[in-house]
Length: 300
Ligand SMILES: CC[C@@H](C(=O)O)C(=O)SCCNC(=O)CCNC(=O)[C@H](O)C(C)(C)COP(=O)(O)OP(=O)(O)OC[C@H]1O[C@@H](n2cnc3c(N)ncnc32)[C@H](O)[C@@H]1OP(=O)(O)O
Image (cartoon, rainbow, N blue to C red; front, side):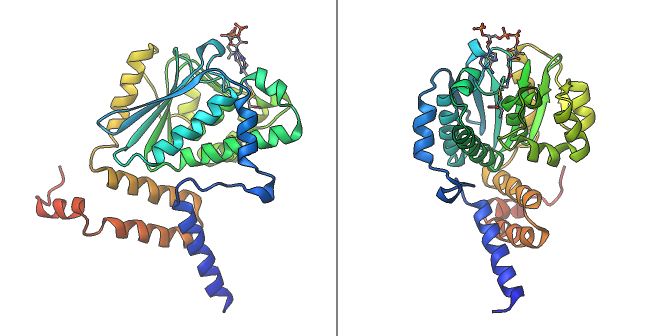
C-alpha cells in the first residue's frame, strides 16, 4: 500500500478516534493503571463536584469544597470524571457553566493530598488522570464557560483553560502559580494556554506566575468579558444569559458546531476536513435541516 494511502488511513483513524466519547490519552504502556490510580485518589476525601442539568440544556457544574477554597481533593478528581462521563451522555445538553462554590473558583489541588502523594509515580498518575478528564471536558459536545469568581489558581487556572470560554467577575483572578511551587502545569493547562493566548503571552504568565485580572484577561483573549456583578447568584445569572446567546436551537446542531470547531482546533487540516465532512453528514437532511428548509429562507 502506498505511503499516501497509509497517511490517509492514519488521518481518518485519528479523526474518528478524536470524536469518540471517553477515549483515554494514556494506557498501560504509559504506566497508566486507572483502577490503581482511582484507589489512591479515593484515599483523599472531602468536597464534591455537583452537577445540575436544566431543561434549557444548560448544565452548571460546581466545585464544592469551600472550606479549602474549592481545592481538588482526590475524591473530587474522581467525581469530576464521573460528571464528565454524565455530560458526554447528556443528549439534550447544549451548554455548561463551570463554577466554584461560595463565590470563588478553585485553588488547585488540595495541598494536603499533594503532600501525601509526593512520589514521582503518584504525581504522574494524578497528572495523567486529570489530563484525561480535562481533555474529555474540553471535547464535550457542549459550549462550556468557566465562571471565574474570586481565585482560579494552579490546577484551578488549568481547569479554566479546559472550558471553551472564560467569564470573570470584578476583582477575580486567574493565576498559574505552579512555578512558585517548583512545578509547571501538569493537567494540560500549558498546552491549552498556548492555544488560547499564544506562546509568548503564555510564557510570560507561567514564568512570571502573573496574576491575571479580568481587564488583562480580556486583553490577552483569555477571557471574553468582565461581568457586571461580583455577587455569586447575579454573576451566575449573567453567565447564563451570555451562554444562552450561543445555545439556541436543536441540541444535535449545537453538538455538531462544537465538534467541527474542536476538529479544526485539534486535527491537522487534512484530517479536520474528513472529520467535518462526517459531522456535516449527520445533519444534512436530518429533522432540523428539513424543518428549516420548510420555513422561510429569510434569516432575521
Ligand atoms: C497541577 C497543579 C496542582 C498540582 O501541582 O497538583 C496544583 O494546583 S498545586 C496547588 C496550587 N494552589 C495553591 O498553591 C493555592 C494555595 N492557596 C492560597 O494561595 C490561598 O489559600 C488563596 C487561595 C489565595 C486564598 O487565600 P485566603 O483568602 O487568604 O484564604 P486562606 O489562605 O486562609 O484559605 C482558606 C482555607 O483554605 C485552605 N486552602 C486554600 N487553598 C488550598 C489548597 N490548594 N489546598 C489545601 N487547602 C487550601 C487554606 O489552607 C485555609 O484553610 P485553613 O487554614 O484550615 O482555614
